Every structure is written in C-alpha cells, then in structure tokens.
Length: 128
Image 1 (cartoon, one colour):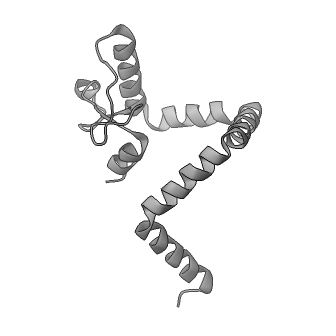
Image 2 (cartoon, helix red, strand yellow; image 1 turned 30 degrees about the horizontal axis):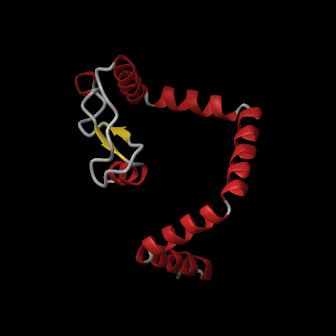
C-alpha cells in the first residue's frame, strides 16, 4: 500500500511529465524576471561549495570512478584547443552552446567521435 507521500510524489511526477514545456516556460520567465537575484544566489552557492573544498573532491572522485570518460573528455578538449575539432550547435535543435556527446562510447578509438548536443538533449541521450 502506497503512503500518501508516495502518492503525492507520483502525482507530481505525472504532472511534470505532462506539462514539461509549461513548467520550463514558467522557469524561464521567473529567471528573466529575477536574473540578478538568481545570479547572486548562484555565485554565493559556488563560493560556499568551493570554500568547503567539495568541488575538488567531487571532481577527483568522478575521475577515479570513470577514467575512460575523463580520457575522452580531455581528448575532445585538446582537439578543440588545437583546432582538430570545432564546437557545433546542437544536432537536434541547433541551440548553442552544445556539449560533446560520445555516442559510440569512450574507447580511445572513439574519443573524438562525438555529436554536439545541448544540455537537455545530452541528458536525454545519456539517460536512454
């Protein structure tokens, strides 16, 4: 038997899925109306995160857990820096900036085999 809290969470999830665009539009409108407040909040949060030394620890732990992903990310970084690879707009919607998505895996032979996706499409691709 589901508890009331579980039912509320399920209803909320169903609503978010059904009204994703409406919610995103409201979030964008809020951000535009409160841009300075949100930027300041973000800066304060970043300072606190860095001051506590958490960011470096999180990054190091991620690199240790996923060395192949880190090698692929670094390879793309240096390819862009040297001019072998150029950043492109999102392959799905054309939005910039876009992130490099390693769609064939992170192996050395596929390190530079990327498609460019904006953050929402990259998240969707990673979750599929």
